[in-house]
Image (cartoon, rainbow, N blue to C red; front, side, top):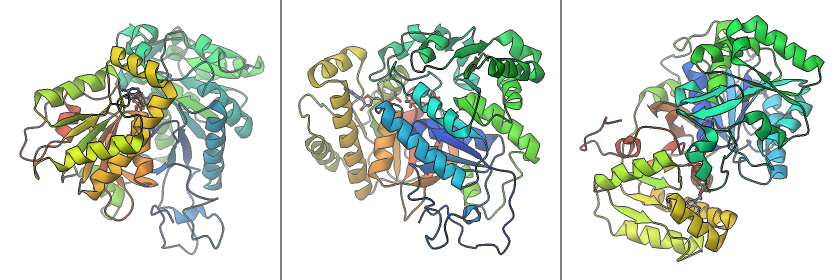
Amino acid sequence: MNEHTDNRRPADPPRGPAPLGVIADDFTGATDVAVALRRAGLRTLLFFGVPNGPDEADDGAHGPHPARLPEHDALVIALKSRMIPAADAVASSTGALEWLRGQGAGQIYFKFCSTFDSTPRGNIGPVLDRLAEATGAGTVPLTPSSPEHLRTQYQGCLFVDDVLLGESHMRDHPVTPMTDSYLPRVLRAQTREQVTLIGLATVRQGEAAVRAALTGAAARGTRYVLADGIDESDLRTLGRAVLDAPLVAGAAGLAAGLAHAHAEQRGLTPDTWRDETDPARKAASEAPGGPAAVLSGSCSRRTLEQLAALADAGRPAYRLDPVAAPDPVVLADAALTWYDTLPAGGSAPVLYSSATPDRLREVQRVLGVEQSAAVLEEATGLIAAGLVERGVRRLVAAGGETSGAVVAALGITGAHVGAEAARGVPWIHPLGDRPPALLLKSGNFGGSHLLLDASASPAEPADRT
Ligand SMILES: Nc1ncnc2c1ncn2[C@@H]1O[C@H](COP(=O)(O)OP(=O)(O)O)[C@@H](O)[C@H]1O
Ligand SMILES: O=C(O)[C@@H](O)C(=O)COP(=O)(O)O
């Protein structure tokens, strides 16, 4: 049974408006979108993986019963579907959709990365095709624009900070290198459906103009409409315009715009849901403590800067080398043996496989892209479990796939969304018997001292982000 369950079953359960159901294609993305929804005032429940069976939140005897979950306005399911074969991503997304519908979800939001991480084989296109068919969505509005993370879309081109996607560090991503910045072309390579744009000029004309553009696209049989957006007000306009769409997709930016529209409609503000007895409120306000460790498999430029800050601070560091030992168990055993040599009560160590583009290419040349990622992710999961057995209470994981491996290895199925260590990077308080607090850090997020500060002991200076 999932512990988001509220066993105090009311005789005549009150039912609010249908909750928003979110399917996120990776775990860091799920925490990013969950905290964006909560910031807008939606009571948000987060699940890792599709809860078991038709309704894991039930006692199994009475069939699915939405009233068994604590009151909520949004349900987020984190999948690890970004980099797996497209058919598997479609299957797991379909499972998530079915579960969300079983919980009464109305609108569905598919959360993908703000850097549109995908390959010509998918997985954004194939997953959207399936979700559109299953939800009966004629036209699907979408955008990766997420101005709070400095991702903007203009004339269909995606910018990361101040450069085009294809010229950003995303060119060197280990599994989903992004070399084309023009998103209609990127998406067209992944679907047979028609793709069109809503330009910034239309968005700036307001909600009615966006609705008219969507209606026009539907009349022409165009399935996907990529919307430009370069600041929060564009995303708010888009959010209001797509409030009634069965299926919407994008990063945390459009999710936040949509969440504000839902909150307005429901009369919610960020404070209305917070009552003293709500465990989510407690989680949202408390920074976790206890022995910490950092696990990093992200090779993103920002993560490499954050690791350099740990090195500069003299943190103990252990590098996982999959070429020297391409066996996850051997790699994990050696790492844990190293950990056991550290002085008790010392500063938090970092165990990492993160590598510069040159080093990464060398590993991938020897082991292959998929094999190297699989070995490292399994090893990282084993290390996470070993660290928790050794008393680690705060685990900071850098990288979306890496975070997925850590959460899966710890058997975590759901969590309260806690305080944000950086924008879009909340602490996660898993459900269960004394689990560690987790910070699942997206490769590209946070200031250069985020890993250092999040894993600092109370005696160490913090707040340098
Ligand atoms: N040294 C390495 N060689 C090959 N692959 C690596 C190496 N280090 C990490 N990886 C893999 O690269 C991928 C990084 O993805 P992820 O964890 O999602 O980070 P990000 O959030 O930066 O995209 C993971 O699959 C990870 O296992
Ligand atoms: O939208 C985003 O950028 C993030 O929410 C996200 O999905 C991050 O993925 P990783 O960079 O793979 O951690």
